[in-house]
Amino acid sequence: MGHHKLQRFAENLTFSNLFQVGFEQLEQESFALRGRWHEHFGNDNPITLELGCGKGDYTLALARIHPDRNYIGVDIKGARLWRGAKTATEEPLNNVAFIRTRIELIDRFFAEGEVNEIWITFCDPQLKKPNKRLTSPRFLDTYARFLAPLSTLHLKTDSQELYDYTLNEVLPTRDVEIIASTNDLYNTALPTLSEAKLTQTFYERMFLAEGKPITYIQWKTINTQ
Image: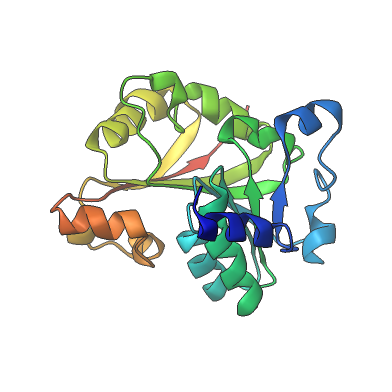
């Protein structure tokens, strides 16, 4: 393991906005802020999650323009989360937090109705393992355990396969309203797409440089169950 990565892991332990909880600990005890995130943020503002956030590009960008909302980035890679947590600490952005965990465990961190919005940005499309896709029925059922009614979800990806799977196979079986969808985000002009174009992640810039179109879906839950 590189020296810089070790330094970042050590610094992660000092950030008050980064939470790292192992599976064994979650099995033994409830996460302390579950149902009590308002105590961390000091307000009752709506909560938005960015799943597979990497360096937290969307978490940070959205938090800057919406100080009346709270944003939490989730990823398993500690070295990536270091960048987001450090930036939020330095600016400072007091409406930002990060969780280091596997997405499979995300419902352990939030109580029923505690989250209002989810962004899924450039996740692994898991082309050979549909059940592991972050928009699969399995994961949507997990999110439903902590989403408030009429919550908004976003999928932004370079994967045409994941886009088609989500739009044509999964969402038609759910009680949702599709707000917007496009298989070429930057060649589509709609007011509802403004936040989808707000910032470009590291991977997004890489995909665009390769000539890959970016796809996007926004939908709202009608019934989270």
